[in-house]
Picture 1 (cartoon, rainbow, N blue to C red):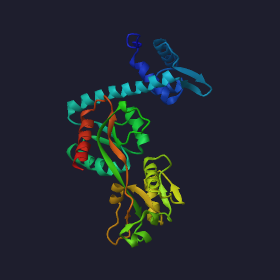
Picture 2: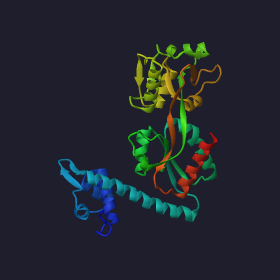
Picture 3: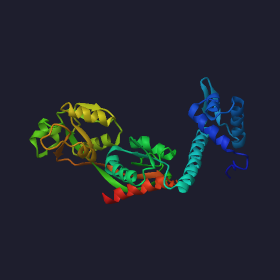
Length: 313
């Protein structure tokens, strides 16, 4: 039988305190963050343990460290507080029309293919909606969706994630292209290139374990082709594109990104896509939200526009 925290006296002040205690790691800092005295904060900490009947934190030389139970309670407290904030925002939006803020996450390719067209339509039709877009790897975005920091994200669910905690809408496979600078020796050859022709050059790849790198390594391995001897590792798209433009290095990137930075015919700016005999595609991504989450009207509007972009692709 579960513990009935509400009947035991759980209050919003306990939730706020647990959330900031996790963030600041000390009772004094947590007290300052929510504008109460340190004795009042200590009392809240003591009440939390009495309500739960289990140790929620332990003192260390550097302040306070949450126990496993304390950490889980603090995470849920943060989510509950965000839901309450969203409820207030939704009431305000319904009273005024479509207002409010929407937080969206995306990996790079889908951001260009689907987020930008959808957000452009939203800005034209609903200029009062405030938009935030975080572009990052799926491993960074998924925890933000789960914690409520992002309303939803265009990314992939990592294999280690609990899929029951999320809802996925429409899956789309992402193609990969190899790009070089205009004037590169391989670009001048034209036509279909054997993948072996790319191996003597430096390759720019994400860090080991990243989905793109794992996909490239697995595809080459299945084709019994070795990795190039010289690999430069970076997680920055900006650095990757700049280095390709200023060297003879080759980079596998999302095809949508390659098209966005494509050089004009005969031009010296942008990137050139190489045609190779080894097609590469990354596992599908989708529009992901937290299971059971209720969108505000503004978030629902943006979500629907991105779904529309998916369906039109």
